[in-house]
Length: 66
Image (cartoon, rainbow, N blue to C red):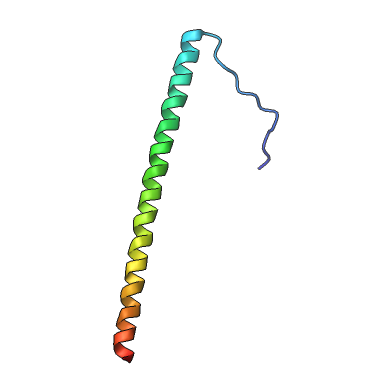
């Protein structure tokens, strides 16, 4: 798939329509930021769970050998 680098988005000529377009873009941007933060938090929780699980595995192994 080839990207068309010559593409220039067409902005609405009507000022009300332009305001709506910008408001929607701003809203979408905020929504994406929220989703990004939620994803980062979910990843952080999973990483913490993995560390805890690994710590328990290593402690269990230590108890078996000592």
